[in-house]
Image (cartoon, rainbow, N blue to C red; front, top):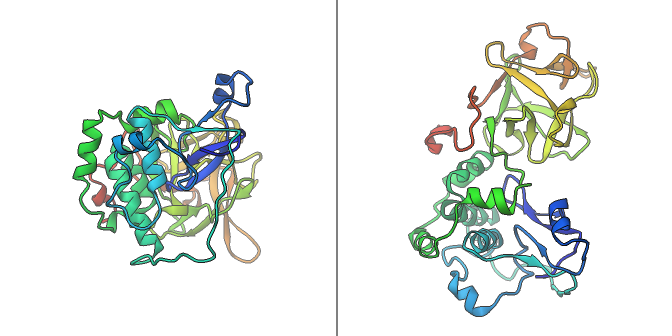
Length: 324
């Protein structure tokens, strides 16, 4: 497999493939030898080579998947969980020709096809963590994904490890929080609107928007480390009445430490000893900030599926109930 010795493959909450900097633990394993392969959690599907016999032994492609999308993550999970390994060969070179347009169609649309494929990989390989994915992308649960019994039998015959093993041993820096108090929308009592990352990036402000129940940008995790997290970004505040910024989660508490009170429904920012609130600006709109706690409805927040006990697995019960 080709790639850079400075990046390796991972995925975000929506199971979208991304390149990330190689973590220090992998750099240490290579002991400074930059010519050695980099072990990578996932791969870009168009850029790999594999022994033909091994490819057939581990089940080739999932024949139930359609057209394009998701197959690279499905193969990545399967290879690692079933005893293989993925490595980026740092000195390799691969040519990849991109077409100006695809010569085939996507029945039902590209999103429908990708949702079906991702649903199949989640049902077969992600165990209880599939429910985390379904909260992020609720449209996935509405897609007919076909029969996966053959793929589950393959997993059983290959004696593959659980997805929790993959997260703990292969991708411990995954953005999926494995211990958390809540996962879902964070709704303001006064406005009945939800925190929304607005598709913004690191160092930008978190937003507020009408709650739409479609997951995506309105899914936040209140983690066991008491972070408010969206993918790999955490809500961060540096001063009273200051803006609420999304910064890379650093797990050092500090400006990213929040204490939720389930009785008062307040989110106390520990460093500034102030409460997450909505503040009106000149044009009449609201934006999240932190202000002196005053027990107003502007400072009350409802966390979807909140539990006082941190959970490792799934706190949602029957996942279909979540969307009713």
